[in-house]
Length: 128
Image (cartoon, rainbow, N blue to C red; front, side):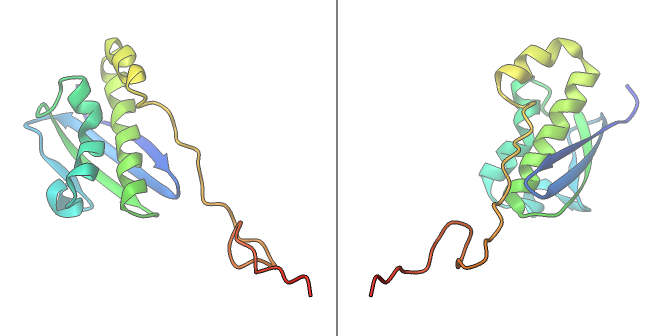
């Protein structure tokens, strides 16, 4: 396997992931995984596809991610990694699908409406 790449998106984040066989190094925007995502929950989201397919420590990843916050960025990376693993070995498709790693989460922030302080919140109604 030569270097493979895929794009993942979540909320307003876009992640480009480049993977090749290696010893498990993960570099995100030039920083190690533990530095870029200090919370263990975000690290678990990023590594989930590798963990469920038992490929953790077998690939080096170089990630470029932009937009959104850290939660959206972690989700975008996870989707891209799942897509690469499916392309690499089609037998992993069932495991990845069973763990819902192919689903592009299409939930976005609802826009603010005029005459209201937020998207759904209203100003207090006064009858008199």
